[in-house]
Image 1 (cartoon, rainbow, N blue to C red):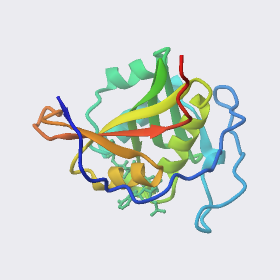
Image 2: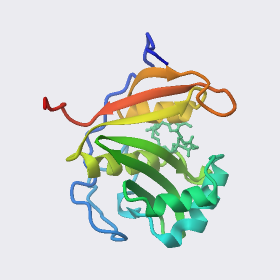
Image 3: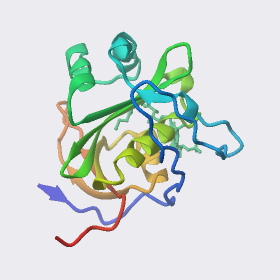
Image 4: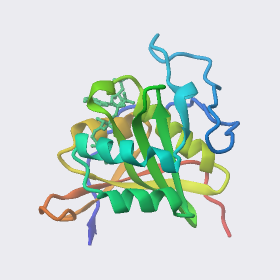
Length: 191
Ligand SMILES: CC(C)(COP(=O)(O)OP(=O)(O)OC[C@H]1O[C@@H](n2cnc3c(N)ncnc32)[C@H](O)[C@@H]1OP(=O)(O)O)[C@@H](O)C(=O)NCCC(=O)NCCS
């Protein structure tokens, strides 16, 4: 049962940076960012699709960011047909990743994490912007669940324009609630 929240913590407007209009094929770095955010360099040229060789690093990353996915689950994402898995690779290895599932007319954001030593550099924002841009043609919206206590993630999603639309009570195994958030990618079509 989903209860609609009366208030929204989201006070930011979506960024309109379309970093990845020209998304290239697997393993090809794409550098389409021309405007640094807040005077800081962006990481778009370090973004690429994940490859099988990223697995060990992704397992390490998941552990360092207190993620709940085991190595088998992470590996499965690398081969799942409907999954888009993007990584930030700064040359010394993968420091961030994001996973989205394409379901009809929608992207379900399954995971996003950035190495603790590389956070607050815009990596997560760049990863998600790229992920959404890739699906803008076939998806109308993005859906995600996030732990109610995960303030950094809530702020990240709000900064991208997500709205809080519900609460899944005791959604996680430890009993914590999940906040349900959505982002409209484009106007819905009337079928
Ligand atoms: C949430 C997470 C992915 C953010 O990654 P990140 O690369 O540091 O995020 P970004 O640098 O792109 O931040 C973008 C915006 O999100 C918000 N934000 C991110 N981390 C924040 C923090 N610790 N505190 C406050 N706001 C934060 C800010 O609005 C930030 O914009 P700003 O830096 O211009 O103020 C990262 O903290 C992480 O890996 N956490 C552990 C895994 C996790 O919780 N994943 C989410 C699962 S739902």
